[in-house]
Length: 165
Picture 1 (spheres, rainbow, N blue to C red):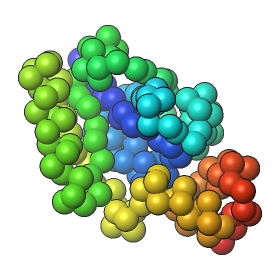
Picture 2 (picture 1 turned 90 degrees about the vertical axis):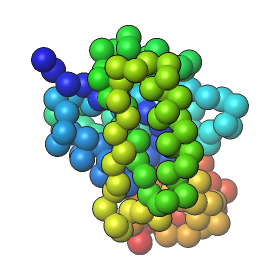
Picture 3 (picture 1 turned 120 degrees about the vertical axis):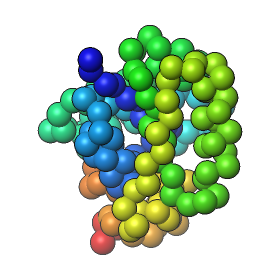
Picture 4 (picture 1 turned 180 degrees about the vertical axis):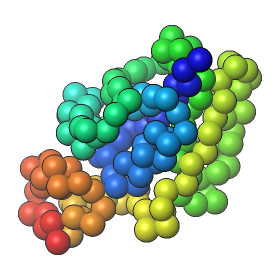
């Protein structure tokens, strides 16, 4: 029996913390679907297609990964994909309450799909896509927080130059 997990998120943009969680999930599962949530109500900086492209670039060479977009209920998508688990990254205690509520609701909707919480390396616990976008918008150095192609993409979206240092 193959164990497949889904790692959903907005990935707007993908960060080194996201990549660390993917690598941790690959150590636990036979395959991981990195699923970009298509939620235009959140007003993402990058389109769904751009986020998919960035993920394909930063995850190339990693085995057993599929990258796709989805909308609608996560548990419906997970069931359609044959996944047995949902991966959620936890950076801090403040993430836990929301993620715990979502995990319980998902369990109520689909009892056969487990939620697995993974914590990134300590050096990534403070990272969030929102903060990185703000640093980039203000011209700050983001090279330590995101892969180079993501820094380049942020630079092209930003009204001020972004440094990679």
